[in-house]
Image 1 (tube, rainbow over the protein chains, first blue to last red):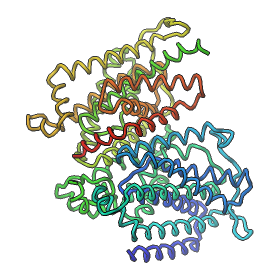
Image 2 (image 1 turned 60 degrees about the vertical axis):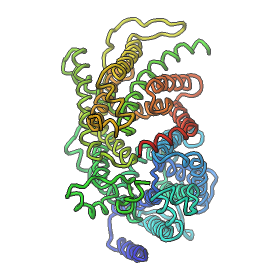
Image 3 (image 1 turned 180 degrees about the vertical axis):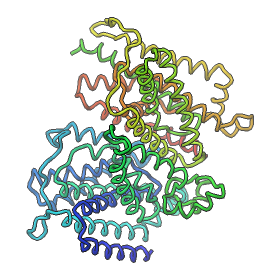
Image 4 (image 1 turned 135 degrees about the horizontal axis):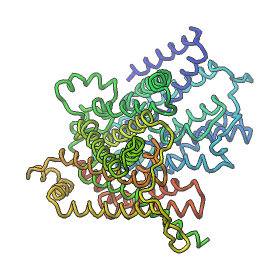
Length: 340
Length: 291
């Protein structure tokens, strides 16, 4: 586990070097988006550690963005106060959702989060006295540090990636200590974990609230970085997009969030640039076709993510079947649990 | 206020009949394979788009509709063989994510093939609408309600009276025991996806003259049909059909009386309520499926 801390330190060093290479503002913006998506996806990965999947992540991302934007813009709060308040509100919302939803069996929990995600998105469009409706909120105040207003993509690069590093450290500490052990026990067998004295519902709730708070924090940063928000980036489509990231990265390791967010965002940029050359008359979200196929292939061949999947490839080539474990559960650990 | 009611009820029943067809597809696949197929709403989309494409190529309506249903059945069969069968026996959550992936893929491919503009289909039998109290029921709405009743009736007859239908019921009841008497659960899964796709295609083709057909109509139809199936208890086909009509009615009444635009929010609020009320039963079934 201390390998993870060393990895985070190495990542911090690499990130400090990136701006020195004098990248274009496009590359900086790309890094910033990857950073925000990493935080959101990391939330899903933490949740995946307890065997849960959420399709409401975009809703929490959006609640964080709207709350912080409204507090800072309409009430004139400092963004540095508005953002923690937004995260607290998202955590409270997740708690309220989790109370009934976490009692459902895993498949139906996903559906409940999907329903919540759709309801939240409808409210974003319909409550236009609060949210500005479909046209969204403009002129969201920028962040400032020590009286200096952050303006460029490079300024936000430091803020966003500091948040990513903090999220990684928090997630790593969580995974390495008592909570992480409890979650892995729950993943192995809920009944077994309960028999060991682990309060299954409390731990699941804790990690669900934390995963939503991650999304809320990323959303708040997004609002102050882009200065404009509208309902469309927080629709069901975005939740599926985050799920693709988490699944590509693998739901087993904190590095899955970073890898998945980076791989899918870069793929997205490449596809957006190249597909119009093949289908010139088509506009819109046709790249969903590719994500859909990627999602299906990964879930068939590498249900625990590309990185771990590569390790499992040898077994697969010898004619193995996909594991009967939930996505993210490593096959070796589940051999006993699946029978339970 | 009250004179609006008959019209809203008729509209709700019309759209509800399509939700019912999607919901019954959900139930067929869930009962036989234990999979919640979130690509279910894409089958009406594919049916309607295929039919529109054939009509644009000057094929008459009846052969075009028949070919579109057959084509959608083929797509359903291919979905099962290419996306579901290779992951046979995987965790239910893995399979759900696969069906979401299939749904995204269909939407993207439909956009590439047919573009983003809506297609319209002609009414089957153009003519004056029927006046019912203070509302009107269009000819095509009659087709939608009538066809949904006929299809549902035919499905019940099939499952109750024929040997393949009995095999499917045996497989839904106990897949392991049905293997012992020579029924292949995998062949039954293929069959379930084919039938569910065909039923969905009928719904898509019959509703397209009213709502138009677009590449992204499937997500909404699929989710509404799913809510209908859950309201009906997910394993109970007649209840799922009633659930479809209920969702259509609720949506129509909410849109008409309370607030346009809140229709889906109310539907999914209903889903949350039903899920939390039914959790004992649902939990029990989910457990049973996993064993």
